[in-house]
Image (cartoon, rainbow, N blue to C red):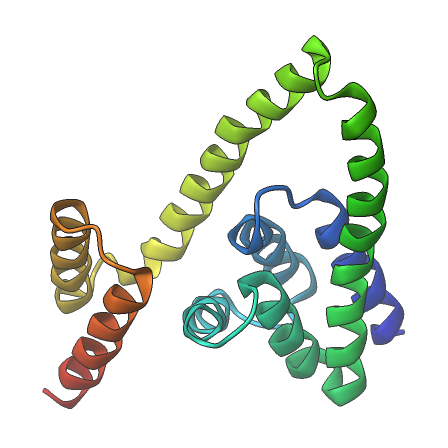
Length: 173
């Protein structure tokens, strides 16, 4: 039964998460609260690890979440289930966009989805930060990384590496 739930949940994520891998996080947050396949703390770690590993973040997290909740088969099912809607939708949308690319309503829908995705990501970021609020080291690291990312526009990998090194150092101190 867990496999059917994995297929349905991750198919839903693949179908309704618009805006890239990080847009899957609200859905993964919801799964954590409803199904308890992993904790919020584990989700935070999954996103961190998925961000520094090759491949799309959403797919990496789906793979790990599927593995955590249903083993190797769960991992394969979650990953495949999340990818299938995108495959079908990309084929369909590419054909429709060619036909309706200048349509006012199509342009309006796409422009409306941008702020909605930002709001969802902000909401999840705040939710993921809640457990860290009392950790002064984590908050200082966050403030430092935000400051340097605003001042210097480097590759995101640069900031991830700084955070990883700082995390190791702060854990040892």
